[in-house]
Length: 97
Image (cartoon, rainbow, N blue to C red; front, side, top):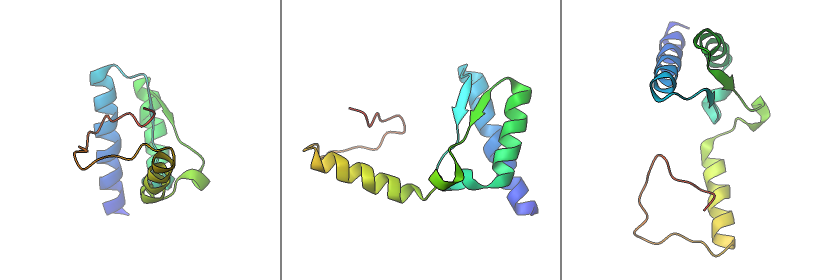
């Protein structure tokens, strides 16, 4: 449990600090890790203290990111929007384009 607490403390602390620094009033935690009860509890508590709204999808939707990325890739390929070999990875990529 202490290892989990240490990891959750870092994730929540860094996320909320970045939100404060950038003036972001709300955050969404998603992906497989967001199913973790302690992460949900602490993020909600600390977010409330900081005046930052924290949202989570239902646990049924908190699955492995690989499944989400595969589905996104399939949909883009089916729509004729395949990426070329020059594709670069950017943390702020917009998938809606």
